[in-house]
Image (cartoon, rainbow, N blue to C red; front, side, top):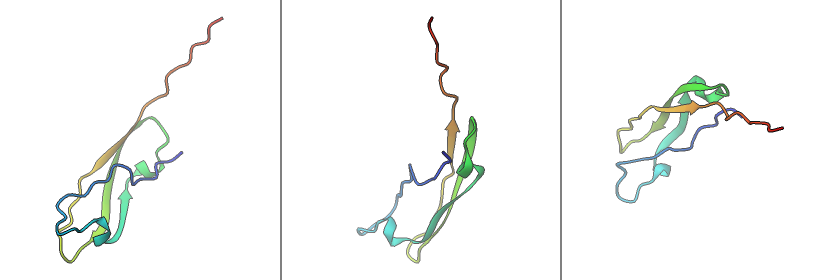
Length: 75
């Protein structure tokens, strides 16, 4: 299954009861991680949110896919 995004997102610095719902735009991710299905490390670059009350900044994330353990067959 390809990476769908959204997990692990956190917001800091919001005040006066504001939440992520107070931000405009749509959180998007630019990277090949969106279609990641092979073993490897993938950079996740967020963008897309706006606000008249805040300066929005982002931190890149990463996705690491590791190989499944090998199954042993005992005879």
